[in-house]
Length: 216
Length: 120
Image (cartoon, rainbow over the protein chains, first blue to last red):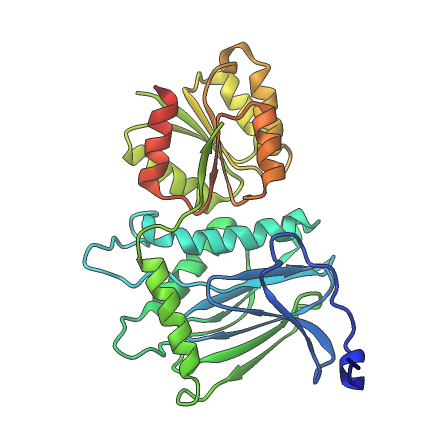
């Protein structure tokens, strides 16, 4: 079979950091850049300036990079919906409900540091947390509260943010320069955003699908 | 009351772990990296060590190795609590003398049960 010219023009993707093999990576023809697209619950870090893309409803994405070395990435997460039994995590330290958020934030930071990033050089940008789902408590606001609190505790400053509001967003983040583009989306045409987030919401609310325990 | 040394460079994670452990009836000593943990381990006789892997100054695997050279910590349970799920790091941890490997995000009940189990 003969490949078309267009296919031959697609440059080879830069090497992927182990652990991120499952992330959907592609060549963005329009912007002529390697890209990685995140679904709810995923995260991605690049050492090669890849663009990280995601679409956010009430989920939050933190974009974190070492601004000196240009190693950076993004996560995409939400906390479970508040229930009658929920403790107020803002008041009573940390309960079960923040664990996915904590995991998403810690994993992203660790991954950047492991690739040679330095804590003192970290630059944080935040997006999402919209109130976009009908018939749902304001989980977006909860996500925003959580991530702000997390960053204060970690002593990390937010250099840019676009949070809250009523419309979903598409985020393009350039992991080396830290540049980002935010596009507000029309709610009506973007049902996939909601269905994906609802699917993910079920997962975080359900019984712990947590990490493994192995005793040696 | 049994004393647990909790080691993590992330302040949020330390808080969350300490909150869980205190809720489980344990006394908690907190350290932000391996170096601090090693110093605290010599001051306090801890009954269990719960350590993260990726930390500045001294990582959790080196800490485990160092603790095993101390008489007081030859047989003390050392659990690693980490975002690392790769087998390479896990094998390193095992070689260093860790008792077990817990991958985050952790379930508080499971964590407490595991701790009780290895302290028996």
